[in-house]
Length: 170
Image 1 (cartoon, rainbow, N blue to C red):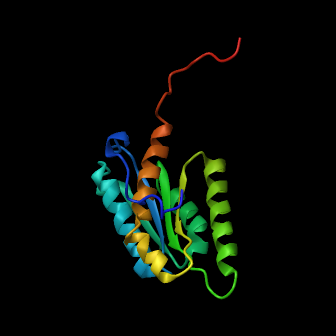
Image 2: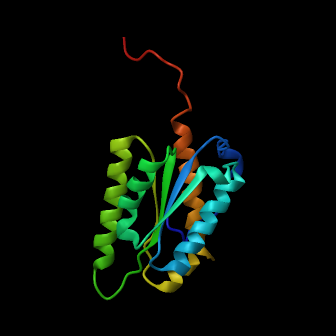
Image 3: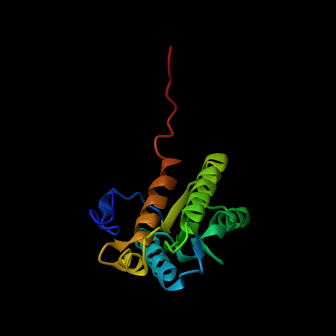
C-alpha cells in the first residue's frame, strides 16, 4: 500500500508480540544522513517501546544503501540477532542509479533472509525527491523506521510462535 494511503507509523500496538527477550541489529546508511538518522530514531525508539533492552540492540553504520546487505551480514556474524533492520534512502536523480541500488539491496536482503532463516528487514526509502523522503522520515506520512521495527518484531516472533508439533498428511 502506498504511504500516501497509509501512515508508516500507524499500527495497533496490541498486535505486537512481546520483544523483551529479543535481540536486533540496525544497519544505517550514512548517505542522506538527515533522512536515515530520522529513520534510525523512529526504529530504535519503537524497539524500546515494545520492550527491547537497549543492550540488545546492535547498530552499524555503512557508507550508503548499497552497502546495507554486506553490513547486515557483518553485524549478524558478530552478534546473535533475531532480526536485522536495514535503513537507507535512495533518492531518484537524473540517472537510473536508484533502480540498480534499490534492486541490489532488496535482492541482497532477501537472499540473506532465505539463506539464514533470519529476517533482514528492508527499511529503505525510495522517493522521487528530498521532500518525499522527509515526508516518510517523520513527516506527514509517518516514519518508515517505525514500520521497519514493527516488521522486525513480528517476523522475529514467528520463529517462536506455533512451535508445537503437528502431524501433516496421512
